[in-house]
Image 1 (tube, rainbow, N blue to C red):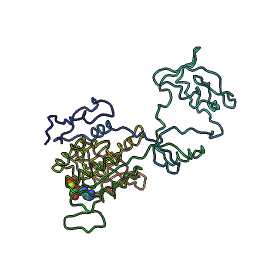
Image 2: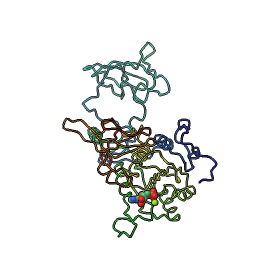
Image 3: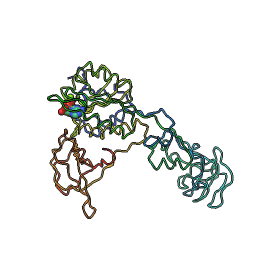
Image 4: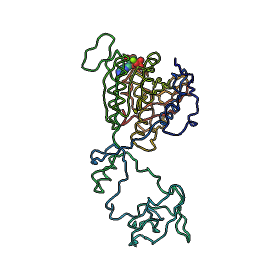
Length: 425
Ligand code: AMP
Ligand code: MG
């Protein structure tokens, strides 16, 4: 299927690969359309290794900052409450004095007790012994817990990592953060530039809404789910419409999208058969890996770079689009937006109210309905028919029921892993 002599081995230990961001050439072992399936976790890990977070910063009014990723520390020009006080016994220090690569030795210049502040301001290399409720001395912005510092005649020694690691300020802004920032009297903050995401649907059978359908045609729904999911993630979206399965038209669309956006997302055209000519096309324009993921729904997935843009080629089936978006694209977009340590969507375990049939070998993302009984005990059941074209299953669901690759049939009352869709769909 490919002229490349290397074959992709889905059992490759990705942890052996060099650290992020990598080049796709380094992963050329994965550039064949592989006959075996790649586990979900490995695909996710491989994608992550290519991502470099956004660095461009813009200043916005806090009213426009909801959902954005804070690019810089917000420093309070006023004290809220009237003065900062310490929440623990320790040493008041200047965060910037703390070395990450070795011990920091600071000179103790005074003490601050609750109700008995130290009147001075600390300078570089200085610290003040502080007790719970003690007013933070001017110049200090951080308290190192006394357990994390050693004081002797040479001064106060602080090991690296004793306080919050750098970058901890890279947080997404929620309503609580908006209020906190406003309470400091700050009207404008620095956030990372929004990601530009271009997307289009592929398929000769697809029509945009507003056009009558001829025999065999269907309305394009993926562009609308994608539009919604991307808007929820606060991306700038570029909707490029439906592109027919005509190589020249597709080539032009890929090139236009990659030039205009940070990320390009398409749906359809990556299944076996179709993938061959899309692959040839993308080989010309960039470096794209085609994977058959060991999951249901959402088996074919393409990921790579076209020019400077990241590319996700999602399956065509409407449910597969949503599942692969939440399992792969969402994490990647959050990372690219500049958010640090993107946590996977939380899961928890709930009792199944009716049995589920499953064949081991793939991770299944069944659509589930989670309900509480009169006693407040939660249980989950599927939405019924799990066909990957049945978008109403996503609409009716309030969770994914995630059944691991090794799992077979599951009996009623057994615990299953559930991932809430609340706020996502
Ligand atoms: P494909 O991956 O292109 O073979 O598409 C798989 C299935 O999903 C086919 O039944 C397509 O008609 C359907 N499909 C593909 N793209 C869309 C779309 N944008 N909206 C609705 N259905 C689609
Ligand atoms: Mg198609």
